[in-house]
Each structure stands twice: as structure tokens, then as C-alpha cells.
Image (cartoon, rainbow, N blue to C red; front, top):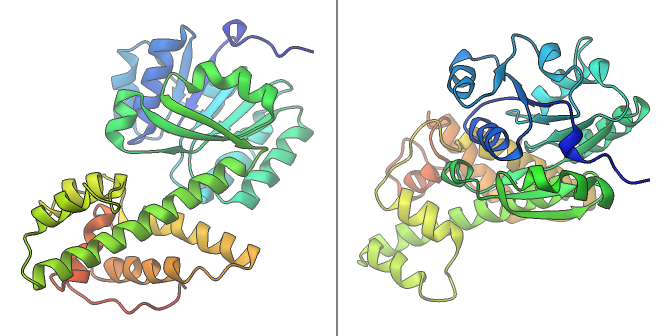
Length: 310
């Protein structure tokens, strides 16, 4: 049986209009040609999106009831758990044939458990966490890592492509989260290496701008170097409302949990966790996560032992 074409869907619902969710929702309404209803606890993004044709809803139920696809951009697995499993949450509102897509980074075991629960309601739960920066979200150039059956993936691909320039099916449900969590683990470990290189280079008398530029011409080149290193560490720009230390640690703890479950000694990730905990203890938890380079250089408010995670 062929899946129902998305063009016949009565509506799209979008829940969670934060730093990444708002631009993703905007791309969906601008490029899909489908009606979009949205819900968020903050009125400002709803007001901005209303000018783009998004219908603002006063409740979760008003947004998702009757929607063919429900898109979630939530801040954590804890929030996903509550939104899905509350007495008036997504599971209670789900109907047969509905597809719920989680665009956030969530625990793998929660993802697979929710998929089983939605299946009991005749609905489909898909993990499609996104990667890259806020600027990439604004440009519609995110990387999207999807856990879904092939037919479901193909049915969703036109909508995923409205905000993702690289959309990859990583396997069945949960596999998108595995790949995203490991993507972030590698990123955080690379940011730590850049912080160490910056501190060592400075103390050894090398200009850090020259150091990073030269690294970018060799085998140490990376996305982290060009973005987190050159655009944040060099100017010392670690704003709030970017991907913060607290959010980074949340994702890293997902990776450490996976490592424990699979029997892998992820001591590099444990070392990063030590620095993230130190940054939070130093009052830097809401700053852009490459701020750990300040602590590594000894210019922050604390020094971090390598340590193990909590």
C-alpha cells in the first residue's frame, strides 16, 4: 500500500518555536504549501510566524488535533516525555495515521519506547534530530538524521527538505538519535582539543589566529575549528541564547549513557564532561559551550579536573 501523499494532508502542526524551531517552522510554511498550526509557551515567536501565514494556537491540543504530521522541537528529553505522556499530551491526542517527528535530541531508549506507544495508537513516531548552527537553521541548511522505516522516510522527505540540505536515513527508529548524539560527542571532544591547542599555542608564543588558520590548511581542519574555534574562541564571543554549556552537557550525558549501555570506555567524553561541569560551576552554564576554552586557558573562574560524569 502506498503512503498517503503529503500534499493531501489536512495540516501540519509544529510544537516548540525556540532558536531552531522557529526558523524550521517558517521554512515549512513557506515551502510546503500546506497549512501550518503552531504552539509554543512564548507568544513572541507565534506573533512573528503569524506574519508568515502560520496559525497560532493557544494549546497543544488545538495545534495537533487532526494534523497529519506533528513536528516537535523541544529543549530536552524530559520535556518530550512530559509533552508526549501527560494526560492531555500527544499520546492521548494521537490518531491512527498520524506521524509525530521529534527534531530534538532525545535519549534513544525514550525514543524507541515512545515509538512503541504511538504504534499502539496507530500512529508513527520518527526521530529526526537536526545538526549545525542557528545560522544554518535560518538558511534552511540543517543536517537531519532520521530514524524511520524507508516508506515513512520517503513520505516525509519533501517536508524534511524544506529546512534540511542534508537529510540522511540512519536506520529504524532510534538510529537518528544515535547518530546525532555521537555527532555532538565528537564535536564537543574536538572543541576541547581546540581549547587545549589555543592555550598551549598562546603560552608557547604563537599567535592563535595564525595557529587556527594554519591548522585549517592541514589535517586538523574541521567544522569545529572553522566555526567554534575561529568564530567563538578567537574573538572570545560566547553569547547566551546560543548552544549553551548546559545543553551541550545534556547531549553529552546521552552519549555517556549510550557508551555505558554498549560497554564502551568513552574516557574522552568523560574528560569533556569534567570541563562542562566546571563551566557550570563557574557560572558559565548559559554561555555558548566553547566558553570552556576560557577555563582551559586559566582565564575563567575555575579549573576543571578531568573527572567522571555525575
